[in-house]
Image (spheres, rainbow, N blue to C red):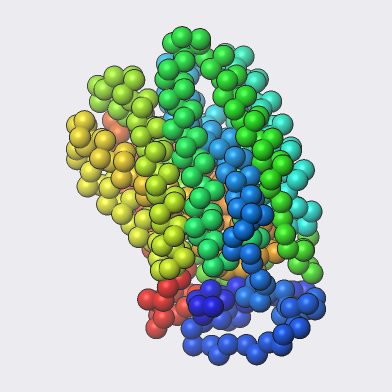
Length: 453
């Protein structure tokens, strides 16, 4: 096994505080382990570098398939919020500003990540079954209610609260379950499952573009609801966990893990990345209409972006297993900054410019979404992956909560111009890059910063 894949020794069992010095670095000698040690429930035998993983086979890929369908019904909706926002701004909520309407969709993304602070530990302790069942019910119920919405508060309750909570219940176990079956190929497996969000972000907006004028918002939303229900049922049947709970597993979050500097800097980097990521995803359609493009063209930018993100979720997942997930994430975030300030800002008003930006940004955003969970997996053992992942994304959720309203306020403060918003996006991407680099430095040390991690 590559020595850079055993960094999860950072964890402790019992009451010991987590310390970054516990991490295995390339300079540390490999531990001496007996053949029968893995069978004993000790602090050593539960470390992830000694666990065995199927790395494939029918059972493992069935879990990936179940995660794919669950993520299609959850992340697919998340990747469609730009189309939903553009439509309701023109129709049901046309009397409200972009910043005000943005609270509906920022609340959705906030809850999708924030609720994981308990959902992740519950997954570690009890498994995914009832989480996926509950998530399907909340998501389907919220979409049905949204099909009847005409007022702002109704959208907040239906989509922001119910769908946001439902997405969190589906999202967290879907990602965490894949980690129970893959270690060396975890980047690839997670990338495959994550393509569902991109494909959902293609199909849902194209459906809406085709059906809204023909059957109206209500029935279009109900058709999407039926698709989410079918995907959720498949996820319920296929998603399962494999490894037993860790000795100190609890259904409660543990924020003491932020004492570990690599985990802290990784979380900060993901926080800033998500803040920037949702700005183009949510405002690219309204930006295009502001620049004079037709409604159909503007709406279709969302499926174009998500189509590109499908490739961005899949291919880099393979390379992340070779050169390391942190390296892939740093490259993706840095090039997102370049795209924002060198393409979107100067030539985004042209047809060629906005298409090039949409395609390239979609690819890089897909990479960021798919690989960051793998980065977190490098910092913990698998039985506690749900807790680490959920704790990190609970903090990240606040970026989703404030990102869209801040973006709308920046647009309003600039008299409707998107220039300030684009500059803000680029600057935050720079800060995200710095944080991820610091996470790698504190984990491996300056001498080993070139390692494949």
